Amino acid sequence: MKRALRIGLGMLVALAGLAGFGVRWGLQTLDQPAGMSGELVYRVPAHARFAQVAEELRAKGVIAHPRIWTLYARWRGQASQIKAGEYAIAADATPRTLLQQLIEGQVLLHSFTIVDGWQVRELLEALRRNPDIRNILPSRVPDLMSRLGLPAQHPEGQFLPETYKIPAGTTDVALLKLAHAALVNELKSAWAGRDPRLPLQSPLELLTLASIVEKETAQPAERAKIAGVYVQRLLSGMRLQADPTVIYGLGERYDGDIRSADLRTDGPYNTYTRAGLPPTPIALAGAAAIRATAHPEVSGALFFVASGLGDGSHVFTTNLKDHNEAVARYLQQLRRLAAKSSDNPP
Image 1 (cartoon, helix red, strand yellow):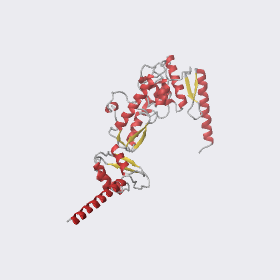
Image 2 (cartoon, rainbow, N blue to C red):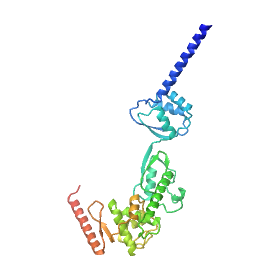
Image 3 (tube, one colour):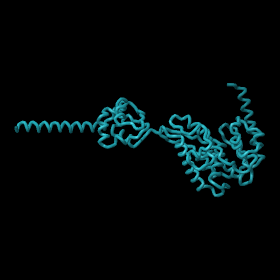
Image 4 (cartoon, one colour):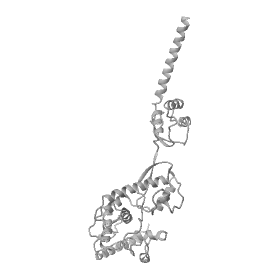
């Protein structure tokens, strides 16, 4: 009897030892990478069961022991906490670090860039083309701001050009709200720190002038100079005479050329026929254009024209005589380039 008892106790000790070894081995596997050759992108479906995810990751070579991983997640009470989404799984990820990634929702982020100078219609087209964005807005949105749950106003200029990091499946509405909030913050900061001599009455007027500056030059160093020209014109009681506002007013009728008739035809965006700013921004102004407009370089220059150097730069002048001479040089440069092009066809 005693001998049988000793044998039984010995077997229990051995089994306990084996169980302990098994537990230790199982825990060790949680800190061992599966040995993938590179990063893997994996999408956790909405409402997915943990065991299903574990098995799919086993098939992809990410998890070597899915049963142990599943038992560990259940023991921790985390199996039901994993977040749906797209994940970039590193080659050296371990089951333990991967579980943490899934429950924290550390999803893969994609870049979406709103380009400086875009119009809202171009932004909406880009959103519709992007495969990482889920479109819920209709193709035509006459009441865009209201659909975003924002105060009703003209949407032009109301979204900040910037590169946004978003998870796959982000809706167009969510991204537009994000871009509008970024614009509000940028504009609020610029307005609070603006040059007190600015002849502008509101943040919207600052944004409107910045949108014109944005469309006038691609040279960062010129933004404050061009803003200064328009501020000088406003201070002098002169009309802005900004071609980009006329182009915006033409809309789909614009074919690449502005004609004299276009400049003479009155309309809310024709700053040749109407004094002051147009009624709304004409494009999406970037942070740099907004800041340059808030702190313009007012040097007395009232005019500017393209330099003809092909780098997008301009010549700035303080009077009409010098401006006309600069225009003549620019046209002469264009004629030389046209002649050279005809002499050396491609």
